[in-house]
Image (cartoon, rainbow, N blue to C red):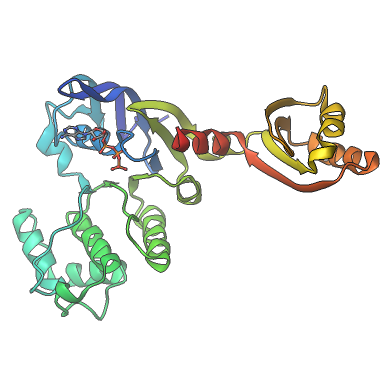
Length: 302
Ligand SMILES: Nc1ncnc2c1ncn2[C@@H]1O[C@H](COP(=O)(O)OP(=O)(O)OP(=O)(O)O)[C@@H](O)[C@H]1O
């Protein structure tokens, strides 16, 4: 197996007495679209900042492209494009002029054609001469991505790139990330607090909660678990009959006045359904959630 692009081991970062990140472990391989998933304040941005050496970690090792960020900072960062904060532009200059200035500052000036191609790639063709002041939030985010790509980095790091975007903007951003992976063969790390977003575009992910990496791995392996949580809703006067029928089938998670939540394997669900019909127990709804989904929803609530 090839060496990981990013290897973070036992990373910790505190601000005064507050432990923002504690013993986080992350491995990102070449070609991954890797999701940092976690609720607000979980420690995603802090982990990214440490990873890019924008802030100093207190403990742990961080290697990108097989080299320590501490010892090879500029060499490593020349291969990374990042959008960590809201991108800042010269509002009264055009999209083209902004990219031209950034590419000159980066020390690797792009040609006119390269800048126009980049604007086309992010879906801003035809808007290159327009002032950024007239751009929507989604257009600015895409221009921000164009800026991160100008120096042809191998790794792209995006901190919550869909936050604040309207539904179309979110779809555009997701498609752009997938095109970066498929057409440009980039490795992408992005953070989100939305499980379904991570599921849609990532092949690997880590869940970060209260500064700790809780689960890391292949998105489909983590989400397509056979074990499910189902919620059966019945009439309150049928609850006892329902509980009696469920005895010995899976393990109850929660019992309410007119519903039961239980953990059960996927293939048991049709048989249970048939038994409920046969016993004449009125069921108003059966909802199934994957265990990780349930787990993540509980994390958000905690
Ligand atoms: N410079 C700082 N000084 C003090 N506390 C900080 C600092 N930066 C971050 N924190 C705290 O560390 C915790 C983790 O913050 P972080 O921004 O990494 O979370 P996040 O997962 O990216 O959340 P969000 O989705 O809200 O951006 C938060 O409680 C935050 O208030």
